[in-house]
Image: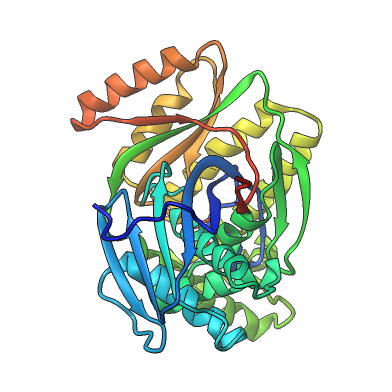
Length: 377
Ligand code: GLA
């Protein structure tokens, strides 16, 4: 039960999760990604108060906490840090801009499932406080301060893709984002007759954050080695495969695998954009399968449950592409499934998954929706 009620909210914010069609672990390497905001969301009810504390209640967790706005410290409870981090970074841009408020949070977006509940939280809080206190933040500031909150308060050294998609998402469009300079364009997300289906493994291996940071460090180390001979490459994703091959003896075996994955995945994402333009969905789907192979074998961020689902998808008629999505080590696969086959596919793959792992799958047929916004009452 909430220790407080909000019967007349001053503001309601909806903040979506995101999918990423292809271009995984590429954002922090300066390459191309293809994300979109979806119709699974977090909703925030905000109310201004005449105090200097913020009171927050999460309906899903049935937990609440209070923040003294003049004393912002990291918390041991992870979800508190989303609020603390965002408030901290807003106050850095706009000192004294945030006064007391109450906030109730509810969600139909699964947490820890690779659909970016973290960025949805961060950007939803930032957008909400911006409007509630008339701060005047730019969208680009909301994106970067939310990313900074994730780095410094939550502890994952994430890239920019998730926050970008959550803020700039547009109904029925994918975002073709160049993470080297944050230039982007919207491309129509027309996959008909195929449905975008997420299958949540309902596992979240706790390696996710630590291994994520290790992959990022490995990429940075690889680029430093490359730059000794080739200082012209600012981003790993831009290094030609030929250059990597030439330098192969300089890298430990695992590092070489990680680096080739990044360069190949970036090329696949560029190719995916091209085939999508020609509406060649079969080729697009094949690139998704290849992406998974790279993530599993070279980048090694998959797990048995995800590999099982993608392997099953590859041999199922009517599924043209599938792969793990997001950071990895659990969470969801993304699948492109013919509309006529999707219900039968969900039934069959759920049974097979239950038999193999004793776990239930949670399916989500998702549609592509707008980014974080104020709900008009
Ligand atoms: C997480 C991070 C993103 C991105 C993906 C992998 O979702 O938050 O920045 O790196 O993993 O593509």
